[in-house]
Length: 197
Image 1: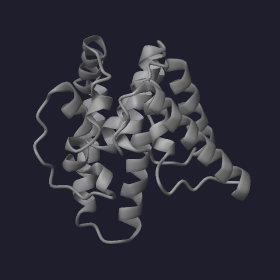
Image 2: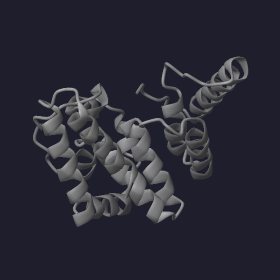
Image 3: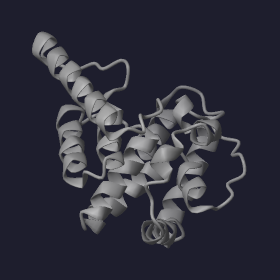
Image 4: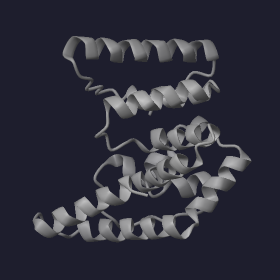
């Protein structure tokens, strides 16, 4: 993810430009491929402006247009925060769980818990520790003490721990499992873990 402008006026201009670009792409091709990843930046930029309703609308648009998108970790984290701030705690918890499973280093990094490197298979560069450490700090700074407490409690809860441990176990198995039915079953289970809860 790119860094964001500090000036609210420039941030609003970037939001408008990105929304216009994505709208034009859809109008021209009847779908949005968005190779540059602008779709992942809109909701977080609304949050940076303090516009919770704008962020929620942007995340809802994303869900409608990209229903099969696996999700970018910081985008998912901001989505959870927007839902939390709009008092939809149940949905926020599900989105936070998904953010946690999209990058196993992200949530501990956010709440100040050390996560040693994991010897696991990674399907994308989004799943690595470096991705979190080099990510946009301004999105992590959106989390106030109360939201951080909530995130930490969930991270340490039994259901989050069980989902995390099984995800790590699957990633370890995928590191050596050859292509075949067993690997396919593990990938399906991993997907189910990410989208359930």
